[in-house]
Image (tube, rainbow, N blue to C red; front, side, top):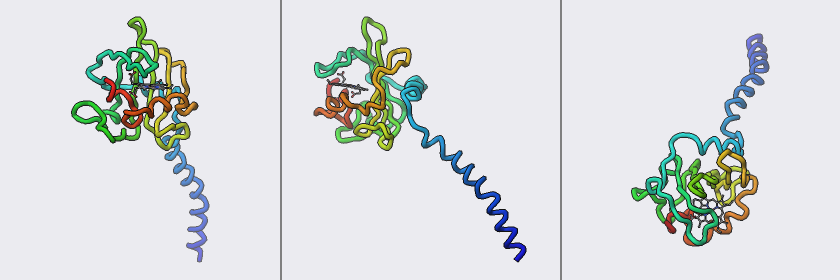
Length: 167
Ligand code: HEC
């Protein structure tokens, strides 16, 4: 009898503590992606350039200007031996694609896609954003790709990415 009272006391004392620790452990994975955290991410290590860093001239259907494209490790893991996403393929969750747009030989803007299908700001499975070179937000992820997707779902596209079929 005494033992079970002690047991109950112990459980009652430690349960809040345990649930507290559990919540702390949970927190990082559910922390929301912001424009600022995404800008940090595109400046992290581990990116590789498409076609060896060639400067590409936009297809006539593109509003972005001359550009170079780079992929983070998750995105690279989705590409085939030719460096392209296979037709009908999809990018792995966490993939980041950075389009560096140039004007007069200087970096002018970043257009960014991040694959995060369960994020509240996802549009067609991606976060859509644009930044100035200093990280200022030109197009927030909160806009959910409104104005981007209508073009990026034009055919041909591969998981809403246009470059592989145009360059
Ligand atoms: C008028 C059509 C159009 C609109 C609007 C548009 N894009 Fe694009 N985008 C393109 C095309 C076409 C490409 C392929 C590369 C090229 O030729 O410029 C591209 C390429 C990209 C890329 C490189 C990956 C890929 O798909 O090839 C990113 C990142 C990107 N766009 C982001 C955006 C974002 C963010 C917006 C909205 C703020 C946006 N785009 C709006 C047409 C568009």
